[in-house]
Image (cartoon, one colour):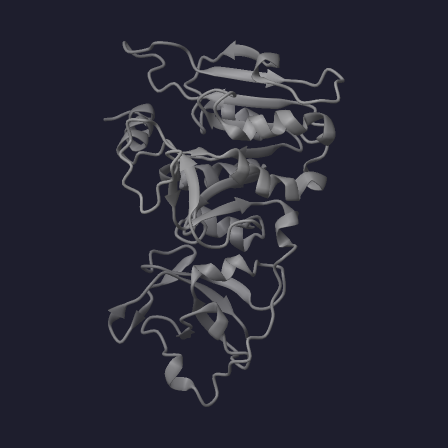
Length: 324
């Protein structure tokens, strides 16, 4: 039977998950959370080393301004404990020395780890349990379900980049959503988000810039930080169910109507409705309006309360809202 480390390494290799977030992307989002980040320890898992990832670089630049008491980064070394081990996974720590300007990777203290440093290693889980901690990173998209589960079990606050569907397509993400501990961020709502990728990756993306960065669609910031509620509220759409019943077909499996776009949500409907995941760009549980009642995916149980079937035809993944 394959070990967890084998599975983790295979997932990263097979899915080409090595995407590096640009500083401009990190800055555009994290700048909006400065008040909520002040005085809080920060953990950046999923890093090759602090000089490569732009998450620790951003916090080094703003450490004095934010009063960050400690910045900790972990590297992942999949071959720990094997015949192929080249170097141990590492932990880097940075504590302020009173300076007013930025810090650099040279200011960090390096400590070898006995674990592989993966996002669910004992070393990482211990850091997630630090009081007041904020976890900031770009976890491999294929491991987002595992990451969100850890955020739920440890209670850590987080702000990470993930796939548009990561919140609604997994049980772990939905539980965080329904608990009011997950929402989309503020700076990305559509279009491509650009990343740096290793030189050996094929440049097959739809958008490739002259500097070699590639555009990835359907990326969103996922966070538990309350600042992300700032631009989310329930507002009437001006559409009605009465007189337009044919535009809102009922599902075969759940007593609910299908709404094809968030902009078409009927103001007069009182009951359950399935809406596209993009509703999270402008609404979050607790921001007013309908209550999040689950999701419609394949009826697998838990928060997945049914399949989005209409006339026997499978439609798209939906969030189930209760407007009764």
